[in-house]
Length: 115
Image 1 (cartoon, helix red, strand yellow):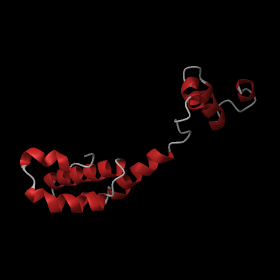
Image 2 (spheres, rainbow, N blue to C red; image 1 turned 45 degrees about the horizontal axis):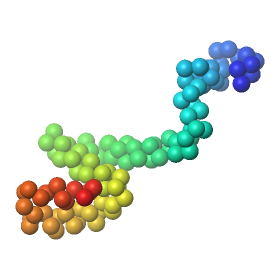
Image 3 (cartoon, one colour; image 1 turned 135 degrees about the horizontal axis):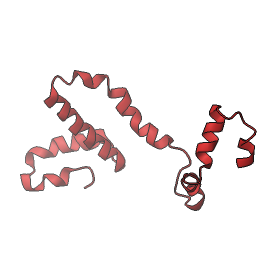
Image 4 (spheres, rainbow, N blue to C red; image 1 turned 90 degrees about the vertical axis):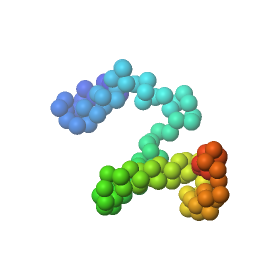
């Protein structure tokens, strides 16, 4: 591909992209997926995971205060953690709310999504 880039317009965006990809320092990172089948060629999964953050950003402006924003971030992190552990966040939260009053302080960690 390196000889092919010489036929492209030098300052053009395609030539810049190809030069970036073919850079000898970056090439191993671009070809790593060939050596390890677990590595995904695209970053679609990461972008889908961040989509909720981008969509909720405008709604979070109405948290009311810094303390409200901190609470919203706390619950958001718990919900995302439940999803990452293949747990339905709504069912998990309903279960936690039903059990939390009767759980001693020393055993609250048992209610976390990864337990």
